[in-house]
Length: 180
Image (cartoon, rainbow, N blue to C red; front, side, top):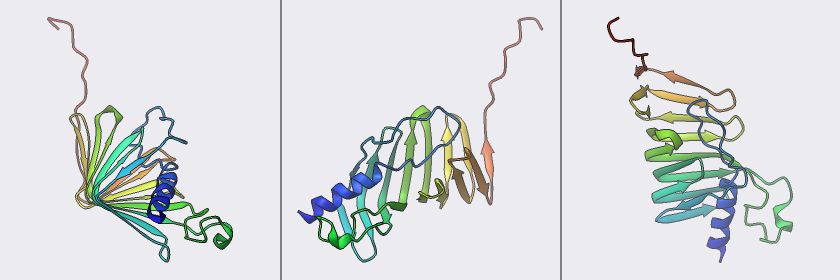
């Protein structure tokens, strides 16, 4: 029963996540939208306040699908005394997700054909920033962005690419009238 409770709490915490925004695009309404996380195994540690999903991890939201071998959710301390909560102070009551870290074969697929791949993706809630490391690559159609580290700042709708930057992009040119 405790494992089911932990899983439901983690899913609830994920509902507040909004992991990526690759480019300017109308926002997809995700507040209150369910997130489904599946994996081969899940482990919760009340002392370290984290939940680790491992093996064939898949997180599905209305705005993206993330797959990886591992996904760790770091939960902050509650704003109230957890020992007085109905769960008996198991550590999840009132705690908010501080960050998530996806590791090994990370793939993030978004609407519009945007795909990000890397070995580690870290999303921090406080600044709505995602850092992709370990051979990060972003693609959108024929356009490709690579670097040592790719950082997205969702609030400012911008990104920074550090180290060994390579960008391949295709522009659409206006066709000229025949004979000119």
